[in-house]
Image (cartoon, rainbow, N blue to C red; front, side):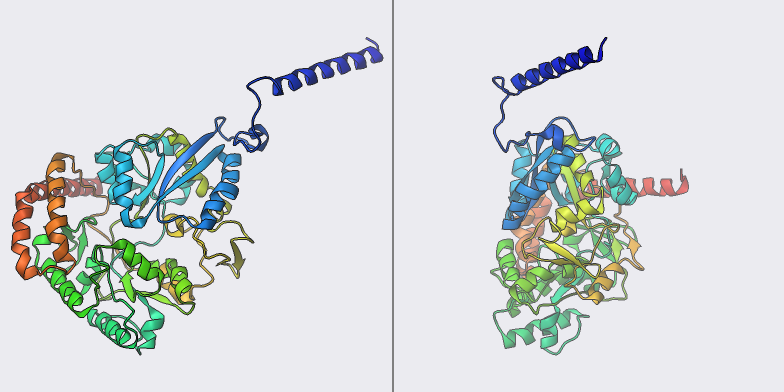
Length: 515
């Protein structure tokens, strides 16, 4: 064939292809409005991104800041569209009623895909059928999660051989919720340097209250008991969970009834005295929203610590008072700290999820690189944050994703605003710690689900006021305990002890026969 003929044939073929493409793009039903999530996906997707575009629905606690809303709608979803061919739709539920509204959404089968909660709720939600096992999803889509989160963290979320949650945090965790966080600047203002005893906390409140009565003492009454245990008993105890019914003796390995112990009496009577002294304010007890408001206003002198809470809450404190400084202390420092869960943060995929694969991909994407990690937590470099001498300097006061939910030893960067000694305290927290007898244990509530529902209803009505210090232990305890027993407390306790004994036998068997 002559060259001219070849060129002519190629030109005709080229024009024919252009014609087909032009008509296809303008045929009925094929047009797309400008700004559609699917626009130019073929050109924008990275290699290996899923073919189908989905919206991932995620539940988070708290209140969405203005910048967070803007960030998700723009920079974050633009990146997620490119990398994972998905759009993130966040639903925020205020902390004050997070559990109630979350469980309502889960129990009614709303089509959310992913949500956060504390590790103790994993066994509860798996028993209720709210969440799905994740082993296959993790194996297929979670290689970066496996690489950057220790295996022991995953083990805590395994029940009956199945994985039910992603332990998103991989950091120090010993003694979590058994320390106290104080306003260090105000502590020094009244001539004190540190907190070593319960009496020190009382003195701090009294001295500061004399200067300015608008400040509240306040130590959470729905937590904080383990902080007080460090001084109120010579034994080493750890709570089974956040419901404060049971505890384990770390020295003997015995499961005990906390509500029937002399230690419960000591805590209740101490809190009652704090209510009378004004250290615990009646308007804040049992009202998380009011407590958060006072903390945001810089009016709380102390609260329960969480290993790294002094770092996490510093920006909030400084929004109210630019000179605020925070510090965490343990009472009875000679006593050991225990690791009950290496990560208290758990992300779960709902049973009703329409996009479980993409939910796991999203979790994995966060830890795929330091760039992704910094991006979702801190935002856009130069706009939301900048690096200053190897530390993070935030350029906006608006909260993005909660850093503590994702904190990872491989990617952690200290905030520029936090003093080096605070960071040093946190990084060394796990030194000389011990593994709790509860490590890896999950109470399967299915055999006693009716009894435990009745027990918790009675606890909330009759024991919470005593535990909060609002009702006299001496006056109301016997009646409250009788009601608890009638509701089936002994049946629940017997089942718990049975399961815990089996767990210990299996643990010992594993030690005697290592694979």
